[in-house]
Image (cartoon, rainbow, N blue to C red):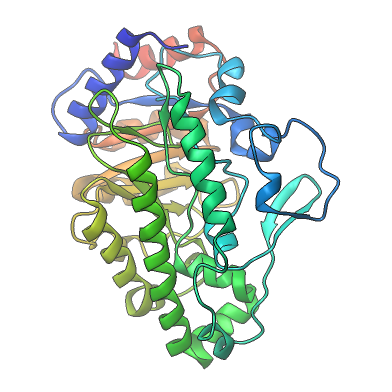
Length: 359
C-alpha cells in the first residue's frame, strides 16, 4: 500500500509537470506490473465454458486489479496511481452490442455475429441490458470497498470502429468501409451514444478522490478521464479516420471534458496528427510494441506530439532506447509507464531516476 504522503507527492507531480506543464523535478514515471497486462490472470479458478455470460462475472470469479497487482508490486516509490476497474478481460462495449464473450486458450474475445453491413442498421443498442447491469454492479462493489490508496477507473472501452469490427469480424468491417460506409457510419453513431451513456453511468457511481480521478494507465487527472481508442483503424488510411470516426471522438471529448486521451499502438499510429486536431483533447498515449518501430526511431514523432500536446509513453519494449529518447524530447507534459520486467526493484527505480534527472 502506498502512503498518503507518497500519493500526494505523485498527484502534485502529475498536476504540475503533466497537466500544467510547469517546471518540476522530473515528469511522473509509473512502473506497471507485467502480469496485469493480461487480466485473464485474475481468474480465481479455471473456466470450463466456451462462452461467458453476465451472471458468471463476479468477485468470486476473478480478483480486482488492486487485489492482483498489489502483492506483485516491487516498486512503490514511483508515481503509479493504484486502480481497480470492472474486470478488463471482458470486451464490455462489444458485449453490450451483442457480441458473445468467448473463452479459449486462456483469453476472452468478442465473437462476431452480424452477417452483413445492411444488418447493422436493424441492431438496437444495447442488445439486452445484462452486460451493462453487470458492469454497473461490479463498479458499485469496487467503489464500496475501495482501499485508501486506490482509485476506481473506467474499464477498457473500445471505440466505434473496434466495436463494429468485432460485430462484423475484421474482414467484414474493412469491406464494409468501402461497400456500405453509410451503414457503418450509422452504427458508429449509435455505438458512440452507448459509449457516452456507459461513461456517464460510471462517473455517476465514481466521484473524485483527493481532488481527481485515476485511470488504468496509472495516471491522476483533475477531472473525469478515460483513454479512448480506435485500434482497428491502425490498418486503415488516415482518410478513413477523418471521414468517419473522428467526429465521434470529438463528440466524446465535448461531452466529457478536457482530460480525455487517445490510445495508439506503435504498430499503427499513422492518424496521430488527425487525432491531435480533436478540440480539447488532453493528449495521446502510445503503447510501444516489439513489432513496431524502435522507440528511438519514433523520437521525431514523440517530440512533435509533446510540442503540441501531452504524451503518455507505455514502454513494453525498447527500454534500452530510453536514455537517447529522454535526451531528445521535452519532459513537460510527459508521463512514462515502464513495465516491471525492466525496473524490478526499488533500487533499480532509484537508479533510473538518478541517471536521468538527478545528476
